[in-house]
Amino acid sequence: MTQFKKLFITDSVPFNIFYALLCIAMVSLAFTNWLMLPVAVLMLLNWIIEWNWKEKWQNVKSQKAIPAFICFLIICLHPIIGFFLSSNKTGAMANFDCSLWFLLAPLTLLTYKPEHLNRQRIRFIFWGFCLAILIHIIYIFGVALGKYAHTHNSIYFYYSSLSILKHPSYVALYIITAFLFLLDQLIRYHKSYSRLFCICIFITLGIYAIAILQLQSKAGILSFLLALTIWFFVHFFTKKSRIIPGAIILLLAFGSLIFIYKTGWIVKNRISETIEQIENHKDNPYGRNSSEIRLTLWHSSSEVIKKTLPWGVGTGDAGDALRLNSLTHNYRNVIGGHYNAHCQYLQSLLETGIIGLLLLLTYCSYPLIEGLRRHNLLLCTFALLVLLNIAVECMFNVRSGVDFIALTFVLCFLNTRRS
Image (cartoon, rainbow, N blue to C red; front, side, top):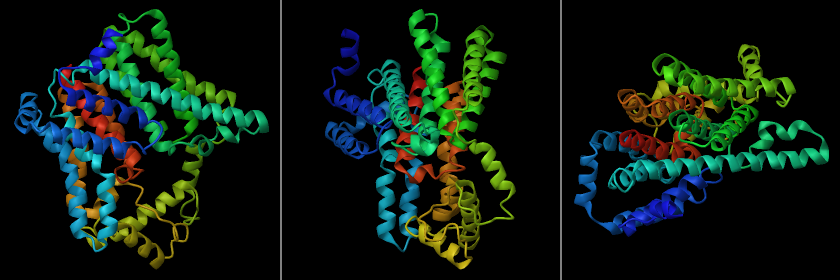
């Protein structure tokens, strides 16, 4: 209890308030985005009221975090540039609300004293997030099991029925991040943990793996297998003392995959379904499955981008430009829908042209380079996961993506600096 109090009570009341709000933000992300806006407003007000601007800037300099401060804030230029490029100013204004945490995460987290926002407090936030993700999984599977008990219909374990709180692509990214954090903690500190605690972590990792596969997010499954492969080979070739825990966890994860497929828990195999849809796309270019719609949107976005380079159409007009192009070329499977490009790279080019793409690549590449430079596997892998997932989702245009990625990038970066 004393250690718990030490986490939340320091000699700085504004920091105590900030840390409590930060914990609420990370935990609530697992369930809803509704709390993120009020938490952001309260956090910003608390940060402004504290007022000591010189000390805040000195904290950034003392951590040698000025490059990180610039690179993490640089993505905020995207909605500003997009606003001025747009003729639909009202639509462009909505993008500012979505991008709030891109501004707030580096502005607040990087300006507090390292002894206040220390490694122990950062790890506590991630532990809380992991617990919240576990509760999320138990809840969605509990609801599915309750419906199955009444109907004996296994469709309730299909991804569309399990996505009752958030879109499966975002939930899968959350779960993989939680999985990698627990994996990192277990490999680093398994000797200091009790046997019972290690068993609990193993069980949790198994539950995470099952949930990732059962959600059937295609990008999620590929990201998960890629992350596991990277972690295993890194530990196998560079950290021989950690081969055994790495191998056990790899077997646990792949064992979960085999168990699910053998017991028939997955109602449909979306990976095989996607491959079939791509192969048949030329024969049926207007299919209404998710992969077929994505292919059409990528093609339509590319056509608009070719006409509007190098500046793009602005954040307020991107949706209208995409819909108009779909109508012009009679892309029947996306007409009438309010779609984005379903690829952040294309969406950035569509909205703010080459500048937007450069801002996006700078924002995502800096954590990867920093992780490689400091040999921090968690930061490197998370950066790779983001780069992979935004290739098939516009995660920077949706609050479920922006809020989580903005906070996790900065927290992982600070955790690296505290190592």
